[in-house]
Amino acid sequence: MLISEVMDEAGIIKVAVRNGGPARIVRSAKSVYSLALEAARSGSSLAGLIEARGLGETIDLEAAYRKRLLRSPISHADPAHLHLTGTGLTHLGSAAARDAMHQKLNGEEALTDSMKMFRMGIEGGKPASGQMGVQPEWFYKGNGTMAVAPGAPLVSPHFASDAGEEPEIAGIYVIGDDGTPFRVGFALSNEFSDHVTERVNYLYLAHSKLRNASFGPEILVGELPADTRGSSRIIRNGSTLWEKPFLSGESNMSHTIANLEHHHFKYPAFRQPGDIHVHMFGTATLSFADGVRTEPGDVFEIEVPEFGLPLRNPLKIDQPVSIRVRAL
Image (cartoon, rainbow, N blue to C red; front, side, top):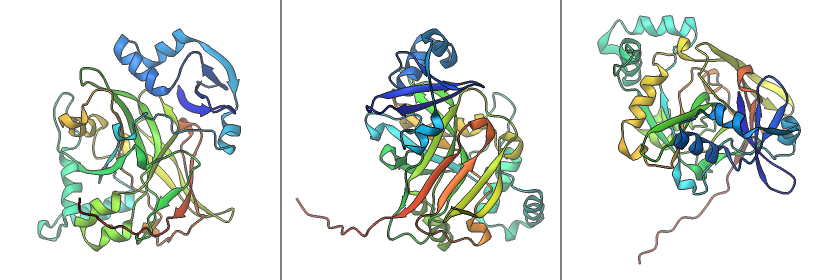
């Protein structure tokens, strides 16, 4: 089942669902967020709640996408209560890259911090069920003010050294009234980052991640396929500039989803009732690694068949802003 949010021509938010057929509107649903909280409170599954509500008229999601009527598939009325976070060094990458990485792992003295973190994941990121594995690299991207709807521009600050895509799968969560995290499902995401700044020094990672992110357009309700395969591409002036396969799912990862979830939600600050979490699980596919430098107007497109519509966002560079701190 795929679930999304769309506005009609009058600006009213509607929830759309499709399951192998055309998208249809969920009756009496104000938002995906409200449906998710209702399911959490009632003990029902999200799919069961939607079935009980019933479906109404069909809707052309592709036409809505072209008209910029598709919204982020979940949002909060107060953006401060939506958290954008992620984990890195979680994916195995291609066979060649993995072999090269394993060869480097033979010499402890030659390991960078990144390589040490990768090896920790290989050795302890997939614990037995019910056990806790090694914690991954973790980063913060911002709150809901940094979330960009599908089709809307990803805005790079004027001071950035790079504006690069990171095609990832994100877990979408709401926190129940008693602090229990509930997973709504999974979505495509573009964990947009500044790779040049990150490479200056690994301690600049936090700076490089404070950027926009986009996710959706649809949420896959249910489990993440173990072998998730799609494509990541950059389109410039209507032509494909760069394209590469995008792999995710636990078969292509050094951590289980459960382990990544545990190490995020173990912190009480991330279990506040009513909050939304969009947690991105990492990638092994970057155009930056192939020497691509993006330009304003480039369109990032991430596509995985099981996730429905592709995630598309053009690149925009923000104007300089004068910042002056005033004493009170």
